[in-house]
Length: 180
Image 1: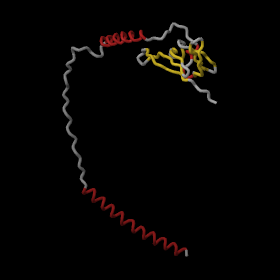
Image 2: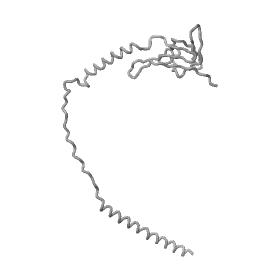
Image 3: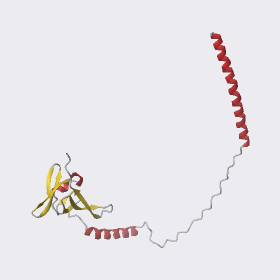
Image 4: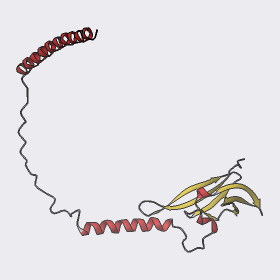
């Protein structure tokens, strides 16, 4: 029985190997024919254009990298920034108020009331409650309270832009409802 199984296996392997080699021979023959028939079509590289330098005609003009040009630009910029920064600047000589040490996002408005006919906002910072009125300073950007209503506190902040000039922007603290 073993001899019979072995002989059938050998016969099947021999038959399959005969089929495989003929396909590969045909494939190799076809590839050789294609290599002979195919001619590559390569375009020649064009000749480079001749470089003709242009003459520099701005010799009499001011050199853009000279110290004179830089001094003129700095002088012009300093007069412009001095004029604009004189209009808007924080009061650096005044005494700072306690709430100027905290950023606005660390504060929350929790209520408002009227005291002696003047609106007052209740602001919570670090679980402490503060009363603030229009004219008080708030936040780290020289913010001064301009308006207090029942639902918000509006302030004017002074910040420096990328050029170092002071600009004015408006910020507000909205009344925060108590979460349970």
